[in-house]
Amino acid sequence: MRRRQWLWRSAAAVFAAVLSVPLFALSPATAMKAHVVGNLVLSGAWTTSADVAWVWTQSLSGGSEQAILRSANAGASWTNVTPTGLGVIGGTAYLGNVDVLDDNDAWIVHGDVSGSVENLEFTNNAGRTWSSVGTLPKGGCEIQFVSRALGWCTVYGGAPGSMLVTVFHTSDGGRVWTLISKNKVDTNPKGTLPFGCDKHLYFDDALVGWADFDCNGGVAPIYETLDDGTTWVQRRNAAPKGVIDGGSDFQGAPVTSGAHVAVGFTAFSPTRSLVYVSDDSGRTFAPVSVPVRGHQVLQDLLTASSWKVFWGHTIYETNNAGRTWHSVASNVDVTSLYSAQSGLPTAVDFVNAKVGWLTSSTLWRTVDGGATWTRLHIPTLAS
Image (cartoon, rainbow, N blue to C red; front, side):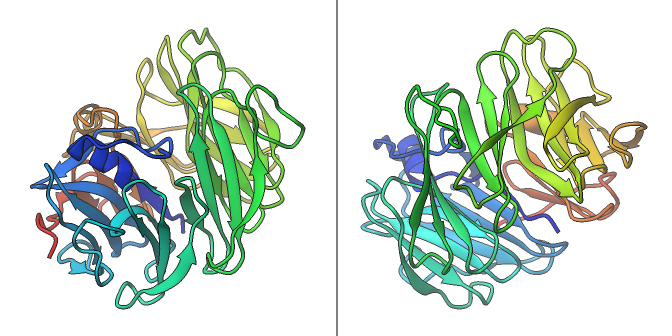
């Protein structure tokens, strides 16, 4: 199944907002306002199956608590799986990054608030025990693993509207990192990512990865790698109908089903949401409209052809890549949750046609395709 990471934010971003300390090496997902759950910040959430979810919480307003919590019973109860010594913030115990692979395997990064020291720890038993792996390359990178051995450490830098991207790779679970890709300011040598536009990298497997672009003007491009991130190739994506005066961006990791690929897209001025689809393994993409026009909507792409679009109390569903749609009434106004997040959007992850998770300031869960959502209680104090 797909693995979904939500709300990721580095410790630096959280503490800059809470304690007014300087930021270090923020990824595209970091410069956002924090979610508040009781007196904690919900810094990250990962749903790995129908019943298992992990969350990362941190204290608000100068508090000193932080925790990794895990639920194995659909959010009915939570277990504190924070590694020993990391429950209290300070010294080299600032949690700065988390990556969850599946129900059992996860990595955490902790170090000092400046980011000069970043230690990597790993669990393969659902957080019951953690082991030290090593240290990360300097620069404040975002980690992503596709197996216990294979992972990437991506450093994002630069001013808004342009971005340097430096990619390190590991084949031994994070013990050794090798620099494999680095772009340059105002130049674009063949096989590298351009400097212009913000961007975010996602990896599907040992070889295939994508670079989503967020551009201030025109149609954002999308790049793909077929050699583990060493070289990057721009893929052809046709422009949607109408003008785009306010820029556009791809949203989230492309979803692949054989030769078919789908990825969310939003254009601005005028605003509209689309899904870009490919039937040739991502070499070319074409835009497909969604039922809600003139708005940026929340999308969940279960497969390359099965999608859900959320607007107000209505969920629009297609199982044929947008050729036909039907609607489902929902008890939750997802639009109000989405617009209330001050830049940190709600996310939805359906693990099958009926069971799904929704995150805003906390987690919600449905077992009837989204008609009824139940809000889950996450402990408000790390313990």
